Amino acid sequence: MEKIAIFPGSFDPFTIGHESIVMRALPLFDKIIVMLGLNHSKKYFFPIEARQQMIEDLFHDEPKIKVETHNGLTIDFCKKHGATYILRGLRTAADFEYERAIAQVNKKMHPAIETVFLLTMPEHTPVNSSVVRDILLHRGDASLFLPLKLDIKNYLRYENE
Image (cartoon, rainbow, N blue to C red; front, side, top):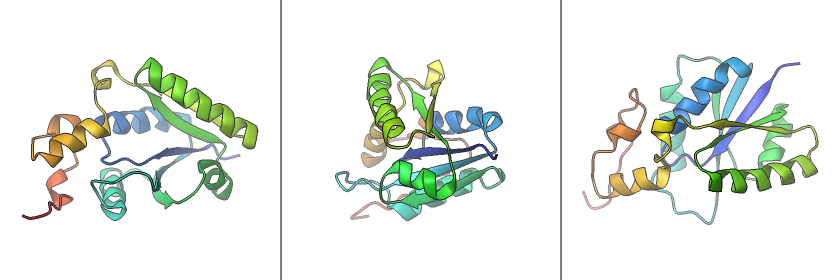
């Protein structure tokens, strides 16, 4: 049976921390699907099409990685794709508590699902999408926190330019 993992998130934007989790998980799975979830309570900096393109561009040479969007429960996406793993990165103890609760609910709703946690690399612990968005919003240089292969300027569309 093919080992398929779903790596869900809004990825607004996709950071070096996200990239690290995916690359470190590659040897564990036959396929990783980066699932761009739609959260209607969030206001996004990048449109979903730009976020999807960013991640596809970043991993275009890696056939084991796919990128898709989904509006609904992650476990429904897992069922649709025959995935039995959800991949999550943990930066802090607070992340663990939040992710543990979600993993337990997912397990109760769909017992075949296993959530796999990878700890963030120590140097990526302070990196999160909210901070990177704030840097970008104020037209700062966020390149230290973004994948090297990703030229963020190609995806930025500032209002009132």
